[in-house]
Length: 440
Image (cartoon, rainbow, N blue to C red; front, top):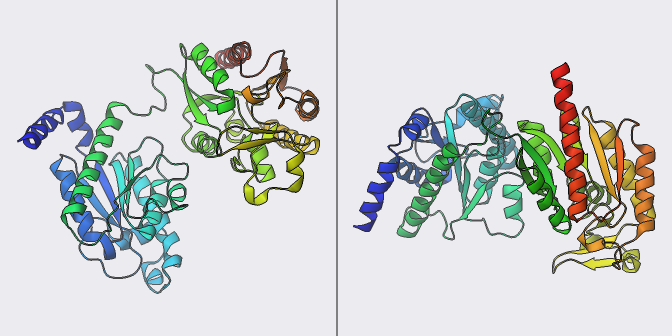
């Protein structure tokens, strides 16, 4: 009786005219290797339809006959990849077929999304099926509902590979996909409810590219050792802007770079913690990719750059060098111990950052604290080293283009005083940009 009442309430909510209008021509795609998990995908499709949404099964299988009919066939996916189905049929190696299905599946769902026919996507599978499904999902923009229902979600090392920098929700089935049974029915019914709820939620609160009634989006890197500064900056700017935070721990700042480059939804960037550039250069754990600190510049977005985390690193245990033992260290938590960069490393990182900023097509301001560059190396602490910081500061100033302003702020970085300087510099940058656009 309770379930029936809940279902009545749910159906009443889905009669909302806006939701019905949004769902009329949109579908939830179920990605599945139909030679292995078609029965489970068909059950999931029916559960989604019971909840008032449309669903289509897309066969992303590799080798073997499908167990049933799919709404989007394997042949369609191969054609979407640009490959000849007969040629692909001759490939007997599963690994060689995977890139074809990923390319074709990505092309197909992007086409459906661009045409306004896609409301969400989910995948079912074990290791191979989850690799295929999540690789295809990653081609979709942030904000599109994505769920991977996987029997191998908890295998060490695979979770991060499945998700990467995408906003994919990973659901662990615990039980194997081995025919429809009571336990798997429970898992798939919950998965159907999850994707339907995400679709309705994304309609009620979509990610806007540009909207007259919405404040502009500003991307800003966060980092634990500069969190106080980040919070203060956001508080100072949120009257006029939506400040979107990204954790600069290697994955978050990678995701920010990808979003800037692919979705073009941000009006500017405040990079409080560009330390991922040095971590990439030195092979440390917070490495943020080779294009870190580049995509905003390519698009001409205004940028504020500061230096939190630039002067220390997080070396991987397997790459730990003997000379690291003599460096200044700070144990930040049970998983991370920071070490101070050497003079040579500081020079290398300054050269790399200046090279990236010099390519920027838009306005850039760099703010450097004369005190500590984070909460862990405030002036007066054991981790503070003004001489090493000066090496970076002087090298950066020497290598930057003459039109890139460098402001030295007499404060520690993780303080309200420095946050005020960041907000002031940012507002000046945006005012100049707006005046330029009006005059133009």
